[in-house]
Image 1 (cartoon, rainbow, N blue to C red):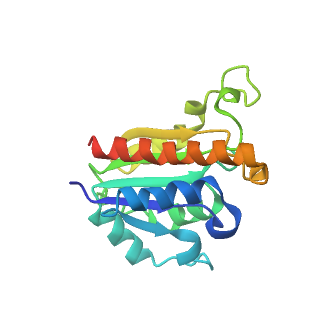
Image 2 (image 1 turned 60 degrees about the vertical axis):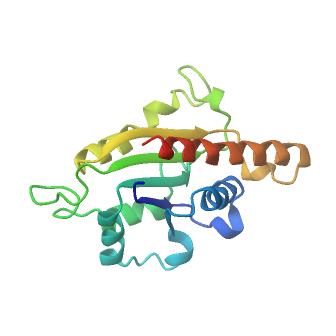
Length: 186
């Protein structure tokens, strides 16, 4: 089986997450051989061990970014990690070949329901349109974009409504199963 690296980009998974915490917890149970990196707990000061992170990436066959969709992209913590770790000469440029051929999957959630992400909808565009920067990121690093797993309607604000909470928990567990299924199919 491929070596899988799952990187959690949530800025405060322990105290300020519902869905991503469930997704990652379930993934750890059903895919215990994957390596899991929790940026928020490992780097609370946002000072990354670049060499360690680059070695993790080098050793992986498949790289998964797990995150909540914040302002139409990855959270600030994950973005800074990308800026610090994916540097010229490592991940891109004429000598930056460390990630060439690795498979890249994004797994993300949004508070807004999926049907709001469509042309003419409240969000204005389909969710695919918001992923162009990540697709280009994969291309620039020579990684193979293998797609995404997305679930909407998972709002942290709804965690105090038991009916919504139960629906969201089931949806988060299903999301994790979809990620695992996609990874097992590689």
